[in-house]
Image (cartoon, rainbow, N blue to C red):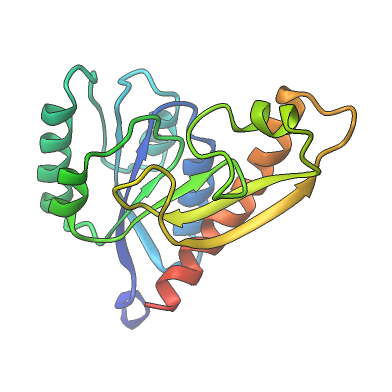
Length: 192
């Protein structure tokens, strides 16, 4: 049982389809995985991603998000209960308060669909196309109290083609997210 000594207990926050969650679960079940996904929480009880957690027998909860403070307090209690070491945001469409970040006081990682520091927040693909950027991509970064401003752990870029539109670009960048989120987590955990 010695090989599991280094595994970190991870919680994943999602809002929707859970495609990044699917890749995190797949990695967590691999032989030399550094993580154990102990909990999945969604701010949307109908999030498709919760089905992946169910199929993998991972404890999961979908809260109807009405009030930020109530939602965050429930989450903090669960993170403590499940002894979570690292929180991963995977398509989580809410901004965590500085109070939550301070109270959790452990690493929070996020995958963002742009080459940060460019295009923090929403509509990243539209903004990249509008500005006639040559490249788009994704970033794995630490979460701090400023939106999409934490230390960048890993990035990967792709060329934007003339024929690209927001849909095609979103598809290409999502593929990159799937490739680099696990790598970013491994890079972060092995450099602790």
